[in-house]
Length: 119
Image (tube, rainbow, N blue to C red; front, side, top):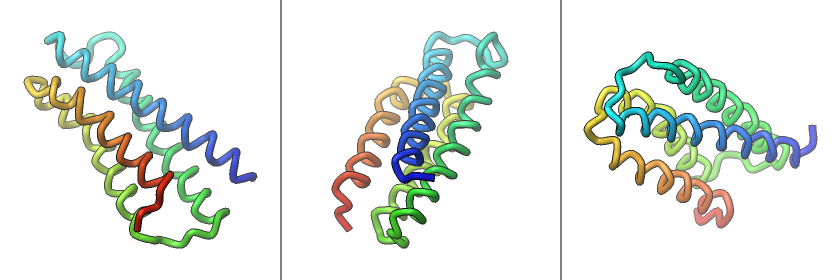
């Protein structure tokens, strides 16, 4: 597959992850209980998104021959955090506002790392 296709799939996965985290965060902010309509869909979407991000990200690393410099390790840590956030949001709905602002900051930092490759 072409590196551009991997990149499109990677961005698609990121969009899915953020829409699912946003949905779960809004549900937590509104005080709705878990397992309401849409909650299962958001959790499934999040899992699929993480799989797409993982496969396409490692596909890009292989196709472009990056190896594993520090910025890739930092991105892996960020995406592990984003992967675990869905559980934190569901278990700590009182902090949903903090998560609402933290999630895009993590995504922005991951984008910075990918674009500038600082280390």
